[in-house]
Length: 251
Length: 228
Ligand code: HEM
Ligand code: FES
Image (cartoon, rainbow over all chains, first blue to last red; front, side, top):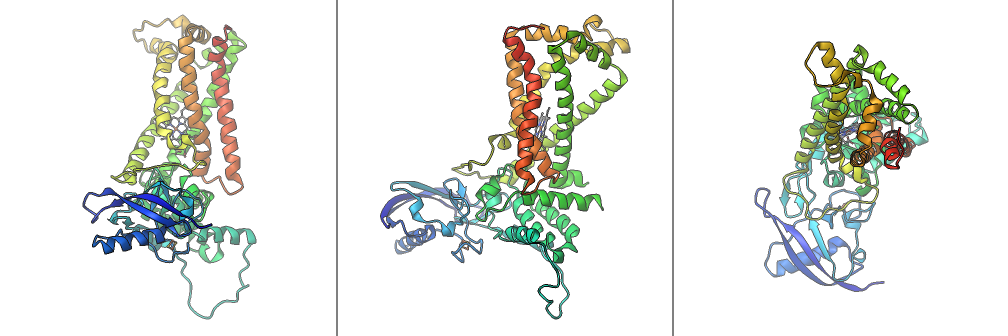
């Protein structure tokens, strides 16, 4: 049922990467509870533009939970308190009248703030470039059933592949570790026959890129799994550990 | 060297030293438990170990394991703090499934080390150290006759309820460290999967509880007014 609520937003504003940022409060009156969180921010930005002020910068693209572009640390949680949803899928009905909502950028040494709530997550792209692919010969497409894959492996690979690379795992991790992301990407490929050829090289390359970019050491707190909008399991991290240790010991 | 340079390599060292320390605790706890039943049997074990070569080799390996675990713990924690970035969050909040212990392993470890110093002064310096000094012909004020009388020292300290309580505090911190540590080590070593993840958590809780019960039974026994 639709109703309207009044909320106060406490938003991190930072003009550029190097300058000091600060929190600024904005009062939002009569926000329909059926509107999404990002629509509510759109309304704020329209108001700021009318007032000839700088709008709040935040990342978004698909707005349907598949691209991984939206971020935001809302009241102490990446993508808000609800598990299994992205910020773009979060709705104002999850907030109460009179509530103060604190909105911060995803933070981590490897994710520097670009402006306001936008952070640079290209570190993830660099990790993917280092090994998150399979090399295949071009030519005619193979028959779909030529390579049998067990249902269990297919399911696990599919679960891992649901990672949208948003960076919530890094943002919430007290160690700033990217292990859940890297584990999902490594799992998704190494579980399938097409990805097995390069599995040892891949695990080594992606982990070493991850370390080089300044992500932390995983201590298995499980915060990543709990906050992941796609509920990716930390059992993939165990698989990454296995893949990496196997690769190193067979060197 | 990947055991220093790579995050998973560092975690491997953390977990292997951790598991090694757990194995030691199982041995030490079982041995201590004997004192509740027979002071003589306990002293026989103490005499058997004493400052004999195998006990000294064991002590050295243990010391190395401890030092490596601690150095890596500090190094890891320092890197992790740096990886978090210079600016912290204004509001932080954890989901329910996140164990408090997993976020406080270093703090718990520091508590464990702190009490360990007390423990070494109270027992090790009166026992193995005295015997060793004698063997090496060093001057020592320690009494050689008491160096293998472990039961005497247990009685000596635990009859004082303050020490009993201090040891209980220590053991609770260690218990918390282990409930997370044991499954974390298995996860790090890769022995985890969708099926095994819940299982290793159970193994971790059961094993750490058994270990701590072996140790804690002694101060509790004394606190309840019994004596050996
Ligand atoms: C009897 C003593 C100890 C035992 C049996 C023990 C055991 C363990 C185990 C099994 C782990 C898990 C390793 C892994 O996750 O791969 C661990 C982790 C850890 N320990 Fe210890 N530890 C002991 C003492 C200490 C001390 C003295 C410190 C610090 C001063 C310490 C700090 C840490 C830290 C920071 C971690 C990392 C957390 C993690 O990886 O989950 N520990 N310990
Ligand atoms: S905007 Fe695409 S996932 Fe949220």
